[in-house]
Image (cartoon, rainbow, N blue to C red; front, side, top):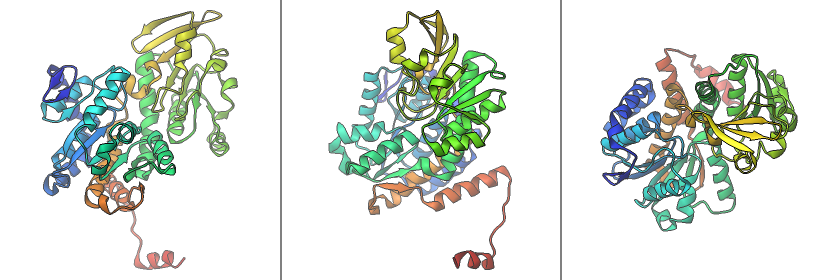
Length: 416
């Protein structure tokens, strides 16, 4: 439906969305503090901000914080199965423009991004790189008006680095994912908890005593493996990076190629950012009832297309679980269509974790509004003072104190 130039499913769902946003606001003190600061400062006054992040309650509150700072917000989701329709409706009822709904087709998903970009944003906040990609391909006429943008996730930064290396990136992008207060906490503790929340609420099966195969041992993989171990699972890690493989071994996990792990796993979680991680040759070795899910940004890590084409039978076994019957009467079960399991099958990262990530986003966007036109480089690290500011604020809200270097100590360290 259309409501105030927005495209959402149903405006009458707004009350439920407001409840969700109010709940996360209570548990996101960093953003509450920034909301107060932004109301006074108005750093985004007169600026259009286009945002594409998984559209659930925590993202919605980030949008409201930016709007409180004067931003004219244009919002869409970053995954067809992560938008929550009641949250989208609540934002529209609050006067923000939203183009998103749950279960969008590829055509609808791209159309929603298009409608956001047609407004000619000065700042873009992206998660995975779809906004930036479409700006550089379909809406090149809008590029000159863009001051800069922020990228939320590892996959998006990989795409940005490729564009920059090819000389194609037209405006500065702040690499939010690389900030310490983002990837060290969001990717590790946020992914670790939310992945297993999504798996557990969807399958209602025990993890203890099972074998979990985690593909990829970056920060997201570390968190996923750590939480699986905590739930009592035997954990196998698959990797292509020898350094990360050694880390996994020294963290107490088994390491082997996917083709060997395939025969042993009960649960499989892909967290690599790459395509074809679990494919036909691996399906052939899997036991009956193996459960597969993905925690990487795009739905390319598990070859679900092959399963759809070659399975002898498929059926919905439970909400968000599709089973595929292969030769030997073996069933392979895929959660959330192979999309991000923590959002397709859950509510995403905990509010307190996203409070840190979105504080980095909000402050990085303010940095762009204030300094973006002065920046010469295209890939911009989050300024250290922003990272440190968020860490100090978080410690204060946690009621923790740390030491401070004396002048003598600073002088000693600075002599090297």
